[in-house]
Image (tube, rainbow, N blue to C red; front, top):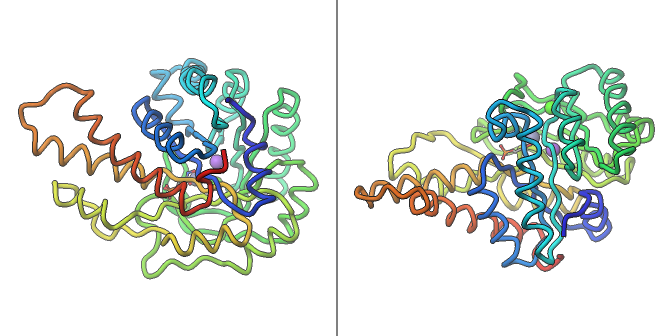
Length: 311
Ligand SMILES: O=C(COP(=O)(O)O)NO
Ligand SMILES: [Ca+2]
Ligand code: NA
Ligand SMILES: [Zn+2]
């Protein structure tokens, strides 16, 4: 059934497990993710960036938002696991309003690059509008480095836990993404991953809200290797080890944004299939090869984050 993201996350926050939020840009990724969540009997959060909405709408923002709502609701209404659709990294009013109008479960207002007061002001505005429409809201404090669509910052600025307390109380935001050292994309760390667990623990204590980890892909070596075997060039790719993610969940992370891991799995499956099947040109076959590996990654992630069986 199609639900509000807040319903999924409040339960996760109470029981200290996490639900991955999987980014999609097209139908194939959605089907692969849905199949994985059904098999694992897990709640499912699907999320789309502004770029994904523009892509699906062929340039028309409202059409793109409605495309994803229709696609997700079509299946959500006929299965017995809870499914939510979330606007990821909403930075432009036009996309946030389109997502609310189209029927998204929740929206992120990402004004984390702005000064604290400005971030608070923008978030308050969106919370008022979204809550009036029964839509829940995510915001971000601190900055992640790395790139994601049109979101990039030179280096990460970690969240100030005292500010986080003021922020959630002032804005009424439903769930918060504290920057604790991760970054978007496949090249997250020069050396070893270093997340500020103490800071995360304090944010949870002070805010008592469901928390979101951005830039949470593990960049799984076996999939990087497979993609490279068939011609990909991903040298230096490094993600957040699964053990570190589990620690984040123990400290109160409940939504784990995962995009890069699915992209790497897909391209590995696609490259291998194309190389091994030079005569093939049916998109359902070669895209199907990508889907297969995406489903594997989805099921593994649902399992180790503790979402499996929680539907
Ligand atoms: O934060 C993310 C995804 O991060 P990754 O690049 O680590 O998958 N989406 O909002
Ligand atoms: Ca941001
Ligand atoms: Na988000
Ligand atoms: Zn993100």
